[in-house]
Amino acid sequence: MIDFIILGAQKAATSALQASLRQHPSIFMPVGESPFFEDPDYQSAPWKSFASTAAKQTIKGIKRPDYLCSDQARDRIKVALPNCKFIIVLREPISRTISSYCYMVRHAHLPPLPLNIGLANCIEDFKNGKNNRASSVITYGLYGLHITKWMKIYDPENFLILSQDEVAKDLNGALQKCLTHLGVSKDKQGEIPIAKGESNIGLYDPQMLKIAHLASKIKTRPIPNTERRIPRFILLRIIGVLMSKYAEKRAKKKGQNREVMSDDIKNNLEALYSEDAKLLSSIVTTTEFNWLK
Image (cartoon, rainbow, N blue to C red; front, top):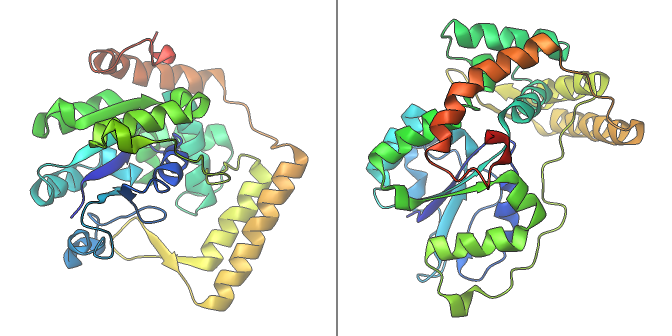
């Protein structure tokens, strides 16, 4: 069974945290994300046997940032894992929104529109109450709302909430907090090697995003009745991977020619997130989350 979940947030350095935690002898975690509590995986109850090869004394965990804002996943996790602990990493919501939008475009969940047009569509869908990938770009930044929902069904002591800045600037310190939270005794914590090159590198250049978007459509296909995509057959995957790598290398060489967010979009996002920031301030310490000020 699962002892802990890195719950979120999206695009907030959770991959870097996971990669280093995986190197600790007391921790067992699979590589990448584990959509165990989403359809179609949920039907086979993969959380019951995923860590069958782990030592009995090992603390077992998974990572899936999408769970933070999923009402369905939250209810399923509570039933399956009533004593689970959680680690949450939060990022300033407007920069996270840009990163999330570009990620959705890159992986063919959203069309490759210019940044301000695409974000305007996301804001419109959110305000109209639509439950889709576009609105989720906005919804996933409402940290206070979603953490409050989790804390209604789990004891607040089950949650460790970190800032992305803390993870980026003092990963060792963040890792030690994680081990303490998970119940690893001080004498077994030790110094965890920092995993190199495990962070997800964002792609923001609009021209390269279009190439990466096409690459994702070539190498993956949507799963019906879900918001997920799965790999196509091997030849198309190879072509798609090569195109993706070209886009990444070209963007890096060009220096990531980022689009500039308009004042109108920025003002809209600030208004959307300001009330939630008040709610989040009642949960976390503002000294650790400077953007809440």
